Structures are given as structure tokens and as C-alpha cells.
Amino acid sequence: MTEFGQDSPVTLEEYSAMDWEGKRQVWLDISDITEEQFEIHMATQKAREAGVPKVGEAAPDFSADVLGGARQRTGETVRLSDLRGKPVGLVFGSYT
Image 1 (cartoon, rainbow, N blue to C red):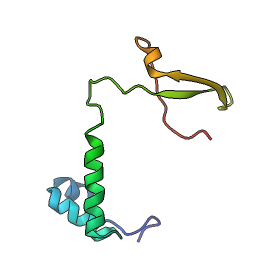
Image 2 (image 1 turned 180 degrees about the horizontal axis):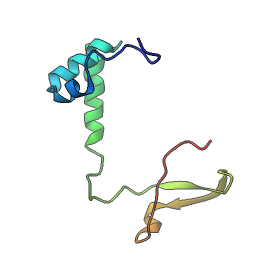
Image 3 (image 1 turned 45 degrees about the vertical axis):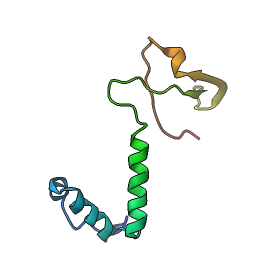
Image 4 (image 1 turned 60 degrees about the vertical axis):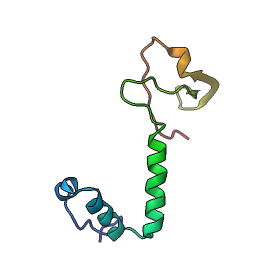
């Protein structure tokens, strides 16, 4: 047992070589969710993937708070679409 739970019953190399059914079984063996909960979770994830932009497609538009030098919100927001044609770097994380 590790600090985060059960040790994996397979190595990363073994897992990578498995087909979907083998990977599914490993997840069920080490998880505390039921098979039904697992199937619901996987169906939800598959449905979400349908809306994810593909490599080379435009990112969906969104707005974000502008942070100041002390990582505090400035009250300003910026929309991705307003930056079209300009270099943009995105850093995802929590600064609150």
C-alpha cells in the first residue's frame, strides 16, 4: 500500500500493452467503485471528449480574469477572441 492507496498490480509497460478490457479490469480491481459506476463514468468521459477541440482546430472562446503583479484580480477580464493574431500563453492553475 502506498500513501495514495493500493499499489498497482501491473507495471506501466504492462498496462500500456494491454487492450481496453485488460485496462478496464485493472481499474475495477484497484478501484472502490462498482462496475456500473465505472461504466457510467467512462460513458460520461467519452461524451465529454466529443466536445474537445482536435489538434489544429481553434480553441473555444472564453473570458478570464486579469491578475496583477501580486496575483490579485484587477477587475479586468480578457476574451481569447480579442487576442486573435497575437501570441497567447495560458497558465492553468489556482491562484486563489
